[in-house]
Image (cartoon, rainbow, N blue to C red; front, side, top):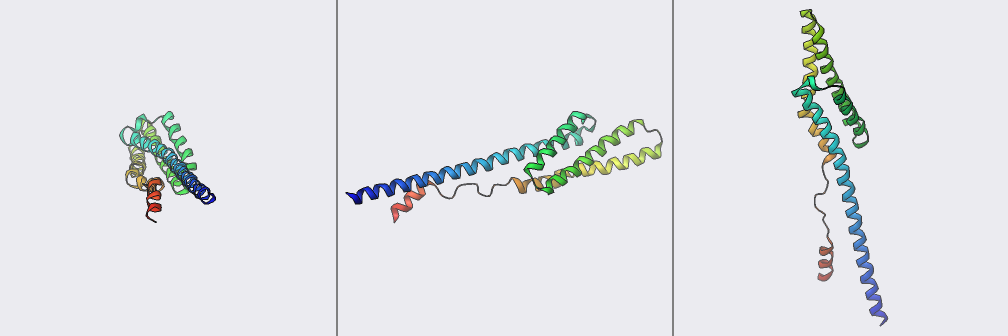
Length: 163
């Protein structure tokens, strides 16, 4: 009778341990997914700002600039220094484009206009390079290391049954 109680207690302890492990894995995967969601929101905010500058730079006003700065500040907490530094350079290039557009509206001297256009074109190129350089930088932080859990409760039960 004592042996039966010991076996039932061992089975119950094993079951409780496996449920605890699966709960831990679920919590870990949820944390990873939540972090991915936050990082993706930052990436989307940056991508939208770049798209705005590339397609309609005149529409990138103070509100859009503040939104972009907000994404840069959020990125500080969700990404490494490489992304944060990249976003600061991108922000400088975006501001150079918008400042050059404002300056071009008031300039009358053709030589000054040409100099301003050259400065704007260089900044615009740095912004549009985002489509080549940005996604690989962000992707390093947004890839899942494990897409499907390797151990399930059912596989544990089957392994035990085989032994």
